[in-house]
Every structure is written in C-alpha cells, then in structure tokens.
Image (cartoon, rainbow over all chains, first blue to last red):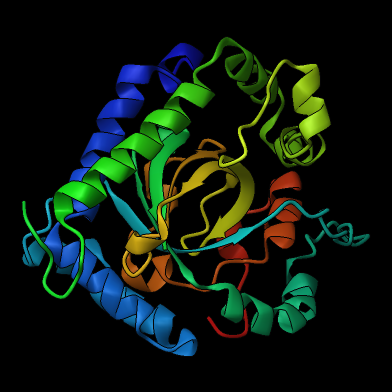
Length: 132
Length: 154
C-alpha cells in the first residue's frame, strides 16, 4: 500500500467505523465484560474461547471481514534488551532465548490485561484497534 | 441500538466516545508532520524500525524537532500482540472511565508489513501470552520469525 493511502483520512475513518460497529455490539461487549471479570491467570484460555471471530459472529456480532482478535500487552517505552548473536556455526539464537526468557513469563502473564481487536492490518500496516 | 443489560451507558454513548477518540487520533496521525515522520520510519528497513521507534517516536524532544507536539491525552506506546504480528507502536487515547468495564482505549497501531497468512487467526494462536515487548523488538531487529518463540506458558 502506498504511503498516502496508509494515512488517508477516509480509509482510517472507514476501518474505525467498522471497528466501532463491531465492538460496541451487545455480544462483543458482553464477552469483554466476561473476560474482564475472569482471573488474570485464566484470561488467555477464556479469551480464546469467547473472544474469537467465529464465536462472536455466531452470537450476531457484525465483525468486519479479516478482523483479528488477540491478546495484547502495552508497555511504555523501554530500551530493548540485548540478545546474543548467532553462534559460530550460524545458528540463530532462538533456542537460547527461549530458555532465557523464562523469568519474563510471570510478568508477561500479569501484563495480559488487554485484549486487542484490530481491523485493517496486514499489508496496510496501520490498523484500527481497541483494547481493554 | 439502546442500553446494554446491566450497564449504565448505551451503545450510542460508547460508539460516540469511540468515534470521538478515533477522530482525534486520525487528525493527529494525518498531519503533514506526522506523515513525514511515518515516511522517515518507512524508509528504513523493517529491522531498523524498532530502534527508530525507541530513539525518535517515543521521545518528545525528537518529535518536537520534527514539529510534532503530542497532546496530553494522546499516548504513543509500544506493545506486543499474542498473535505475534510484527508491531511497532500505537497511538492511543483512553476512553472515559465509565466505559472501562467493557473497553478502556481506542488506538491506531502501526506494524511492519506482513502477509495475512503469516499471522494466525486461530484463537489458540491469537491468545498466546504476548512476548515481552523488548524481546519482541530485539527479535524484529534481527529479522527473526516471532512465531518461532515459545514461552513456557504457551
């Protein structure tokens, strides 16, 4: 998508209009209230069950085509951490990172207070979202 | 439209508050100055963009150099999604507190490009624990596939 299309006022208004129609629908609001009333450590499981496009459409929520519903974690700006370089054999450091980030898990679980709803992403790279 | 069961606000009120927020965010990101900033970001390779976000987009003094003044109630933040899309930053406004039992904020989110099929809509994938934001950004800077990272609780 061209630069001027990405930040086109009419395009952004259209995708956010669709978002508002979808996420203010009674089935969507009810699902959000249920999720927010759920204990933090159960929210991912509950979110996957009740806040997914198929479940919401089946209850009559008018979701736009391609809408994404996902967990989300906001953080105010912090410096990025350093991640080890690939080893001498050229293997990426993914396995090491998986082992090393275990200490981040409790904080991440605590941070999953947010559900992100998003329309118009992907190739557009600017999408309308809402969170809670 | 009408009232929600058990809530003290109507769908019309919530819709109007969201529309008002989105209109303010859209007005902010479509100024000449913000569009120039966005072009500056997009001119960089995708792997260089998280660093630009940290050094420039999250820094009021750098934004001011570019003629951008962020209103007090508009937040520019970094985030991570459970579906692991390569996200860069979001421009966000909180809704009035009366709506927080359902929705807390509205935002426009800026991502690196990705193919639609690269980011799963499967609920089990979309509702994973998001990566730590700093880890996510380090991985984007390396061109890594965020889907290759498995958290202990996944």
